[in-house]
Length: 85
Image (cartoon, rainbow, N blue to C red; front, side):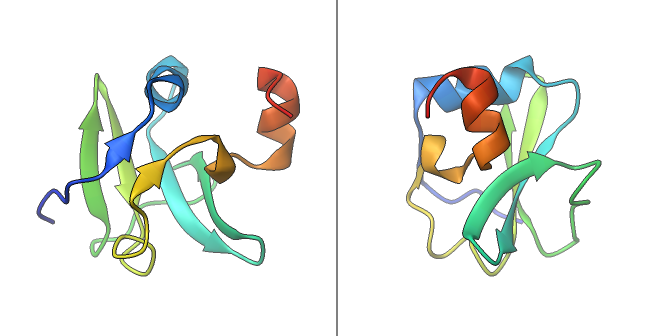
């Protein structure tokens, strides 16, 4: 899919680049959250953004709604690990 202008805050760029797999923003019961593609595999309809050597997939449902990729998209367990709770 075509790139959409959105902002990825530096902390989240670092987070995405530090991972051993690509990441995906998916819809959950808590709203949009970012996960490894091992947990939430990409779909052909996802928006794809290159972040260093990693790809960030954003679900087609969330892509029109997300303007900023920041720590609000991290699952709670990641917030505790990254010390941003």
